[in-house]
Image (cartoon, rainbow, N blue to C red; front, side, top):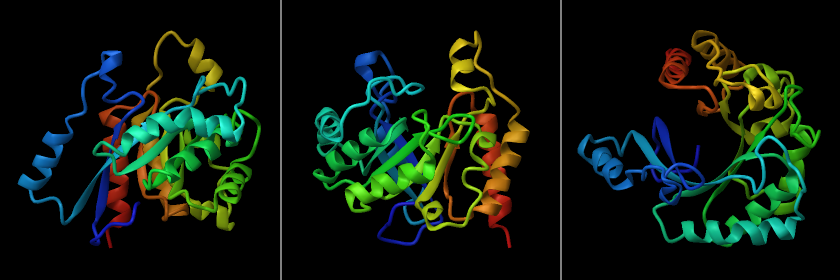
Length: 248
């Protein structure tokens, strides 16, 4: 989680940027003012931190890196959107479904100029590697080395737990930089999901059990959610295993 002024039992991170709240794409507005008022009315501020995440996505396809930008090109490309977040309610910048390290490095550098904390979430293939075939360890180390380790933390998204369980089955220091997971419900590869006529929602009970195993092996991972194919059933199962993991 992000550092906060007081010790809290958890954080709720609300996305606003690439998809959520993109009214110019005919998507509904994120009710930030209503959420803040409800947090105050219900007395949640001292227990659960409400954080607004200004989200950016990859320049190209989230499943295919395509023509990879240079670090400088990526910084210039993402700077405008990230700069706008400084004028909004955003508490941090989160880059979701990032497929390659030069783009991640450019995003971190662009965010650094705003003073906002930045989070990088990589997407992985069924072998636990980025679509560029780079390992997650190599990607995290490369971004940290190029940016002075200013990324608040790293995440994995848009991959099923079975796709990356082996990749993070280590106690090496780089794994401690991984603090979040938003997994897909489906075991299908990106290519298979792209061709699927229907969105595969997998097995919510199994999904929750896999998150439980993840928490037992990596208790430092504490930013949890769902990606493609997930809904309230999957989130309920994640919440259930989190509650069990925190019980004495």
